[in-house]
Image (tube, rainbow over all chains, first blue to last red):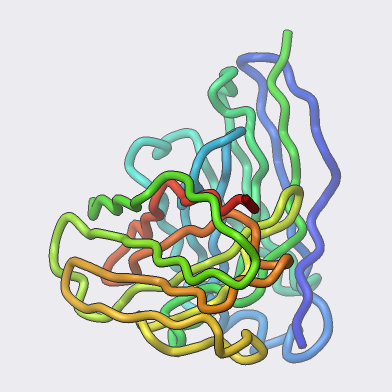
Length: 124
Length: 107
């Protein structure tokens, strides 16, 4: 079974950037199997529902993100290390949230594998 | 974007009760709806996909119905471990969108 392990908590100043990593391991987590997955990023502000941020399909080189974050979020992948990344620039207090990566299954039309979450706190 | 609205926002129940949670989509999403359970400090856990298909390993006291714009998650014979927050998520189109959540508390 594939596991997703995310990088640790971050505290950032307003206006700065954060880059969160998500490494896939176990099961079919390397090489072409990694590249053929759809990885999504979801964030959850305190007390709020999840918000889909964007996705990447490494094998197709496809990335897209939610309109209201376009220009601030970059999702990328390193096939050699089976790791996906999410970078968010121009941080504001409203970006304080737990950020999750997950694998979106085109068979289930849902995400059955999630990372443990990375807390990003924006504070002056 | 497709908007997802859950009701109620919170519900209290006893162990052994049956509880239903509703999720409405702002447009027809066919059967492309998933339900997740989330406990404090944890990632969401997939319970149900395609509206009514139980995810592997999830107890059969969980069931899902609906299609189009209205969906229901029912939990029969509540167990102590079921007290959590539940989210619906549409998968009809990107961007994927989630409901705001229903908190299920023990009475």
